[in-house]
Amino acid sequence: MAEALRRVLDAGSAARPEGDGASGPPLLLLGAPRSAQTSLLFAAALEAAGEGRGPVLFLTRRPLQSLPLNTPAAREPWRLQKIRFQYPSSVPELLQLLASAHEAPGPAPSLLLLDGLEDYLAEDSGTQEAAYLAALLLDTVAYFSHHHGASGSCGLVVALETQKEADSDVPHLTLLQRYFPAQCWLQPDALGLGQQYCLRASLASGPLSPRMEWSVTFLPSGEMKITPWPTQASKPCSDRKGSSARSQSLTLACDNLSGPQCPLDRTLTSGTGAESKT
Image (cartoon, rainbow, N blue to C red):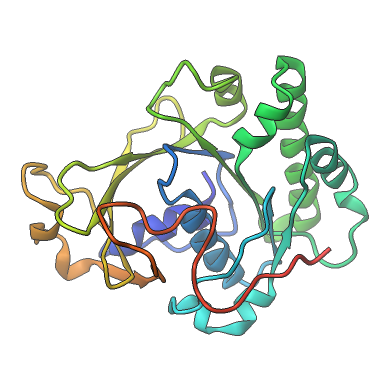
């Protein structure tokens, strides 16, 4: 599991283990449409950018319209400067970008993020092509890790939309799970009230590893609150107090939140546009 994402989700814990430069196994971020995958990927990018081990490479098929610049981390411009956005619009472009990553000047990235894998799979759904893409992602990350040497390794998080856990309708999900031993499922929480939108994030770093779970709540005010998943799921997420003293809020923009829906996904809404850095 990419440690940057775990630290984002673990923001509400009293004790947060310090990183040792290890990125953990490659992670597959799974969730239904509008399950805030892009928001969590971007929060992980900001977390990794603050570690000082190298830039972050953020790949997505469609350019982000703007970034949530009112997060505490995003108020530090030097973090954003360390995130390199690139927008391969097709499978051939994505493969070419990965295959030529070793030719890019500058330090090796400390984290590689790919948003919207399902878009690329829909373009070319062959099993062999999906396996080649997954293998090339791992090979690229291994190359970056080699260049980090003893100082650490490069993490990998790939977001894939699916309707439910172990969804058989998702192309090649079983195949992809072989390449990505760590998985994080984002599931809507029916206990959300009013204009709140709540998610349950369940993360396991391997097939035999215990799951860690968090409650992710989006408020009409634009806040994203992350707390450890409560032991009593019968209480509405707005009334959960067991971990409230240890929670940490990340303020995100949600300009068009008019009902119980996720405010952020794929298109982040705020003031300043993100430009591709190639």
